Length: 469
Image 1 (cartoon, one colour):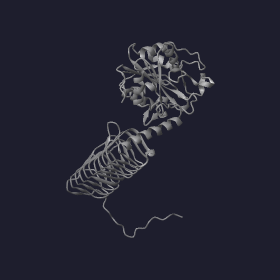
Image 2 (cartoon, rainbow, N blue to C red):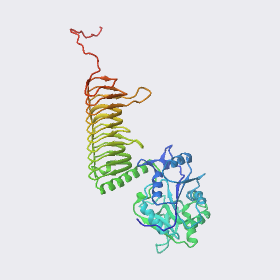
Image 3 (cartoon, rainbow, N blue to C red):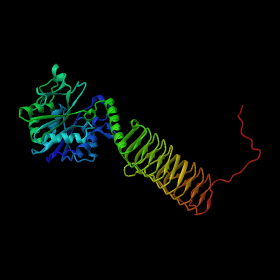
Image 4 (tube, rainbow, N blue to C red):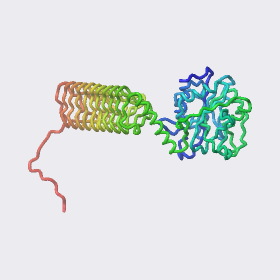
């Protein structure tokens, strides 16, 4: 990583825009990318730069944006831009919060989420508390972007001209301003105070700081990058979808470089954090959300959805399994366990070593000890299941009485037959057997056979009802 100067870093994030083309009641900067609001990506990048001060400028739907910002793990200040009179006006609102010192101020946009930290480190180093540093990119079609005008030698930047104000000759320039700049704070505040709105749009352009920098003798430097994803903004659902695929491709590449085997990198969605050990295999169409950790030699089958879970070494998660942990109540799958296909693990499910959970089995807030099995069509909720328990097909723990949840305890080596209802609170003693079809409402003694069902009778010569004519 490039080391920036020792100057304190301020970051201003512009997040006041309306985003009309999103056609959504959700503010643009709160639209989700990779499971997180756009502005959260920008905040996390700012935090990675060790910014001493982060100021977010809000405007449209400010209350909603500021409420969302308050939940994000970053110390920030907010200030409002009312009304919205351009990017220069936006940054002017943050200017009074910045001290007149030797700091550097980096300006980012809340709807440009995928700029890399190392790129911004380069820009900050280029600023060096004495230059205005611009991040630029060359587009095949630069329509709508501010053009970078250089001197005849093609080196020094002399101006940024907005598309609406550009001459025919300027519009053929392909190098464009990305919207990201770094500047000495004391100089930036002076330039901001000189902005005017004498242009085609009647707005205060942030790009006009370039002409004030040039007029004052400050050198303007520009670093031109090639990866447009780093500077792509989101103004429509189409652009949001394109960035989603770009983000997922970036994540997939990083995973494969770590040794993860992806059946198809284009069919992976990570909407949070995915940490993998060695020799992990992930089949197609899997979605990972929240915080997911996969141990060594874990295999994930096709079409699985896994949220907030730890899956330990050697576990096999078969196709179409849904693992639905939540923050503070994650799911754990022990080493060597086998889950699925078509299984569902809900918050608080805790599977021990070599546990088997089969097709159409649901587990919620229950612990299963080593070697326990529930292989078909079963429900285990609010339960403690001992080692080597065999839980029959069609059996359920009836844990809810309509008001309160109650716990079921099934001790080691119990065999529960098919189609049983275990009505909590109840304890099934170690080594016991519950006969198929039983409805158990009382504790079952250890080592015994417990049967709780109506006596079977047979009526000879029974005549079935017939339809009336």
